[in-house]
Image (cartoon, rainbow over all chains, first blue to last red; front, top):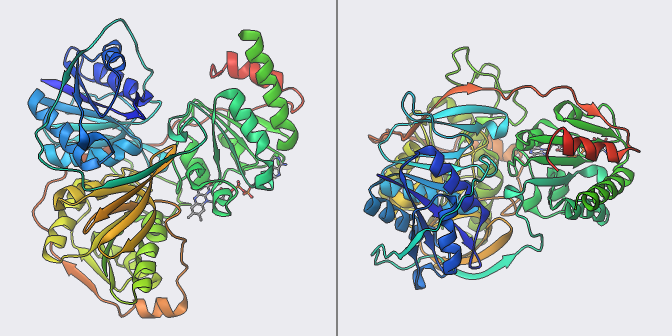
Length: 322
Length: 247
Ligand SMILES: Cc1cc2nc3c(=O)[nH]c(=O)nc-3n(C[C@H](O)[C@H](O)[C@H](O)COP(=O)(O)OP(=O)(O)OC[C@H]3O[C@@H](n4cnc5c(N)ncnc54)[C@H](O)[C@@H]3O)c2cc1C
């Protein structure tokens, strides 16, 4: 028996999600062999370094079929790897890539799929995993009813563990005899460096910022904090900010360690997407804003004054601790 | 152009979530049901726009559920779908739903299929991908732009921190996310017309779910919010560092 972990890369480098998935695999089935499946061009040293996160082997699938992303090729390759390794568990990240591939792996393996795990499996009575439901308004346990299992892991759900080690790298040919049916014509990367769903810190702003021209103070603080930026729904609906920054029940659900919300009232649909954050700071001129009820720290004040002051304070703190 | 849109029934976004006393499921007492937002706002509306641009064709909505789903089916018909299919079985899980819809599509071919990016109840983002796998067609997740030219479909998909432009030929399944279309509010004419549009009720095929949800609970309550003087951001930074340990 083995566990297969899908390792994602972007532009030839392994993504942080891979280290979370590997740590998850190591703890989910202690003692069981972990094989990392990597598709596409990634340098040898990065492949070997996956051993530091618990992979004993890396199976590297490379070639024309893996030049561009195709969920079908990736999903079927993973299922073949699972078959070859006699694996009963496949782990992927619950992000844009994992969401594209996991359902395809699950069908190919005839496996039950847990989407967005926030805990390790509990095997004391069957096989259950905790997830968020109702866009973060509630929690539930998912019991997997099948022999084979696929789990996608919610970002920031497990602290990465690293130790000495090097994985043995082998090339892997799943023998699929199919070519990608999705042709990738172009890839555009956003200028912001940290993708919002994976960010450990997020600075978010709402209609209280009054207009898109005022986002400089939000971006400045985000930069100082190494944080991603986010916004409320109306702000993205009216085009002040791009759609992918919209958080909440109808946007994306995030659970960073730190969520700073400025000029956001805290409507139920907004809270649903962010209340899994470890620490919430709310900055609002209105002491009655509902968001304060969901916050750990509150500042009643004008975002136009508070954000620059906070930025300055964080800068000073970072200088002092550097 | 013959487009299939998968829709799901979910609690209204303002619902205060409560569970049955044995934690086995949602307490549906007093819950208002809606069409899952990304199914309705993005998938359905884009399908309607494409049909309108083509000047002919049909938009069919499909859901797996009992007769209690008919009101939200009528809502989607009021937005503009031409007809509806309801596979008459409880929606056990995404795997079960995908098998049901796949079986229907095999008997009733369509040009392509759109779903929402995820439902706001189980948030799995799973059904569309499983459906594509059962039908052996390409799956494009999180599509924010979709144009047809002949047999070719051009799409932009959100890849988290960027966008990818892709093309597929022929049949595919895509999941719709923000940007694909704008919500349409049904007008009186649409609501009246929806009353007489057909809902075809069909029997389910034999299929097994892969997972079961249980032991629902609410997140632990937050303690009281600590208020910080707006002129003392050093104190906030100190607390974030020493107390919350997030800096
Ligand atoms: C079906 C449905 C789905 C929805 N989904 C989402 C969702 O996913 N995400 C989401 O965010 N919303 C969602 N909404 C909208 C939600 O109900 C709220 O309308 C929205 O979140 C409000 O955005 P806001 O807080 O930016 O704006 P407002 O509600 O207008 O609040 C602005 C806040 O800024 C404060 N403010 C003003 N000036 C300043 C200043 N100078 N400094 C500091 N504070 C200031 C005000 O006191 C106020 O609290 C949804 C609504 C519906 C009906």
